[in-house]
View: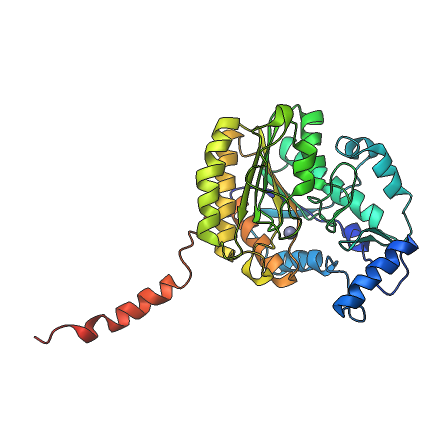
Length: 368
Ligand SMILES: [Zn+2]
């Protein structure tokens, strides 16, 4: 029943200080002029603003305060330490980012930038992911959801990409293994974009099973083909499900039930982490999921956590750029984590058609 389970939502206002401004000059100058050239070509420069904005996170917190979910409690995050980050990123990458404290810089032409407060925000995002894992293992909650920002799944060991600085879910998985002795972690990435960074980090690691549904290439970031199944010792522990734009609730649920469920039974995870991107919702124009679809996916994931790992489940926010949809999707997922009944979506429009069918049913019956 809704409210039967305690869920920690990790929300820390320090993540709001990440706010690159196009009006300010960026380092390095060469990349700045290149990016401005791209923006000018698109006719966007005058009105361009950083798409991964603080209003995303405040929208979620505001909705959870206005419409609380029984069993869900908000708590503060913390700063990830160097040794926690260094489990999945190189020292030279981390130290390079540290040197950007207080500065404004472009890290990638795909509009990944930092502002004065970004490095601390990224440390808190990764630290919130760590706090979510700790909450699940120290018995404070049945499950946890970290409102990470910047997101993480496009960042790999050596590179920031796609709005991502530190790979939060990877930091969380490595922390669970190092601190809590977890041997096998299942990472599920339902963001509309492929989690290329997470895949890279664990490609050769058989202790992490990575399952990713996403819109197929050439959609950003262009990776995640079905044939990418891991490398070396990790061959077989990467599963990609690239989908066409029109794929919606039923296709996603099918992928989860018929690919993820048997894979999880084979792998026997001790912890499930989710890269919970809400940009597969149809309002984001990437894939075609509904609110009910998100609720149903959360239901499958919760069921797997209950079956295989005593309910141990922690989610990290990834994408989702329409604040209203993002907040609503997150709330629907939290309802299921807190013990609510997941939705059972049907083909869109079927409810309406059946009502209309009933309305017309007697009209064409043969006269008595
Ligand atoms: Zn995304």
